[in-house]
Length: 192
Image (cartoon, rainbow, N blue to C red; front, side):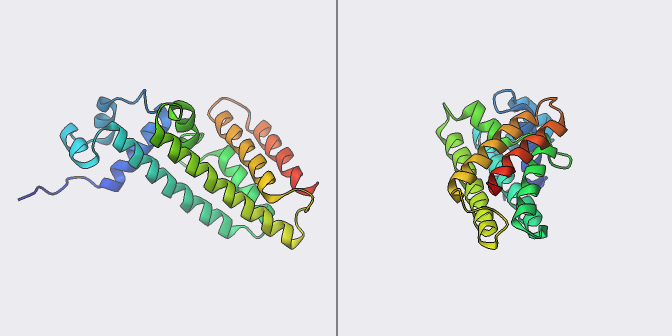
């Protein structure tokens, strides 16, 4: 008769997500995971596979976390301008009880050149965010909130690149007021 799990798989994935987010993939050892997750090594392998498979599952948990945060924040925004401001503030201020920065950006910097799966996940995430930005910009242009002088895709690419930089800087001791000024300057493109 198979044994029942003595832990919540989703809870363990969230803990793994946070550890990989804080330390990165290479720096996180199996021993770190066993200790941080509070499960036995054998249970880790039986449930999640090897470290790389656990990492990819943690990345998927992170994607779901972000999608939920973005959906709620955008739904609460009254306009495209407010939705974009929410996204920038979210990137700068971080997430409640979560490490600063972004697991996707960290993964891209650390692994994308040598890990095709990590590169694919990072690329997919970046493309999804650019599509979301383009959609918000398009709505703002249609409602007259933003200028139509620049194309939505080009603006989305530019804003996304700024967001990536902000997520990197958010992991440093950079002054948050500086990061907000950078975001404000990037958003000025929408009015030109």
